[in-house]
Length: 183
Length: 183
DNA sequence: ATAAAACTTGACCAATCGGTCTATTTTTAC
DNA sequence: GTAAAAATAGACCGATTGGTCAAGTTTTAT
Image (tube, protein in one colour):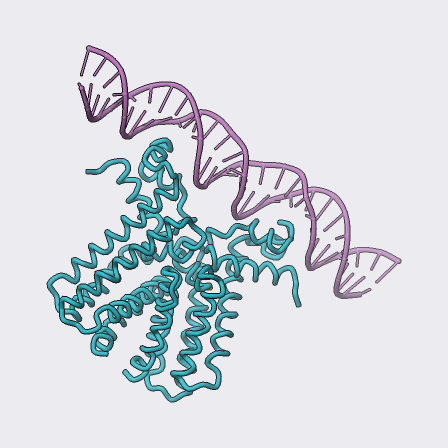
């Protein structure tokens, strides 16, 4: 399926990674999809907020799927390194233009609707739980705490790699994965 | 001194922490300071970009000073914990509304002017160098690498604590400071 | 076949955006 | 004291913002 609604959501998801909530205009999305304004308000009666909310969920789930693919069937350390490689690839392929799809909105989410805050929260939590489950299945002790810490490090490294236009921050995390897993 | 220019800069710095670059309007700043438009364009001929650039530098330096105060005269582990407490206090006092002053802009900085990107880069680098110098003075080996890693963790924890409205992410970093310093 | 529901279309709206401009007031320098 | 410079003031500008709406088209159900 490739409905108008889906194309609007994935276009919005793509744009908010680059410019965030306030930087992404309704007309930008409309122009990219080639759809008039009325269609958007038919599918999203709540307007921009409804669209962005779904875009966050869509972007977050897409990303989680990519991470899941990288982890699958690998030992803990190896899988986590592959996950970092996904992040590095994302940054390089977009020439450092694509932020973490959630961070791009989350940093200013407190001035937005409750629904959007919840969407950010939900996706972040999903990533974390997914990572914890992955570690648990590999027999790592204290999987919840370690997943949280790894996830924190990766998030910081992503932000800094983008800001400095240097994937070194992400690359460096590989060295610390073992330190955390063994702690 | 408390000049019009300074008040404009610190108001802009305050607002971009809450809403980011695109979310902060020139008129918001003007309204808060109680100054007409002409004054702003007198002090900042480059308009919004010039103002935001100085706001980033100002906000970043203010923050660095606060961190420096927390670290001063303390052993490495103790000082870093105090630094985390500063971040926690910032989040709680603003009811999770204030993001890291640089992150708030940096996540979308790639769609802004080179000058603004450079300002973000400069402040981030300053924090990192400061932390490395602090560790070095305390005889920590590999101070550059460890400062970078601690800084990455703290940045991630700040973003996640804000997004989840839960300072636990920051609080948890205290447990890992020793792990990194001893690694 | 036909009525209802779903969807598309684009003109239109008030409000706000960042920015320009000229006029006036205040401060500084000599 | 007076001229120049700095700063304040706010009306005004075109462009864009998110959003509404009435009219038309297509799809679905019966």
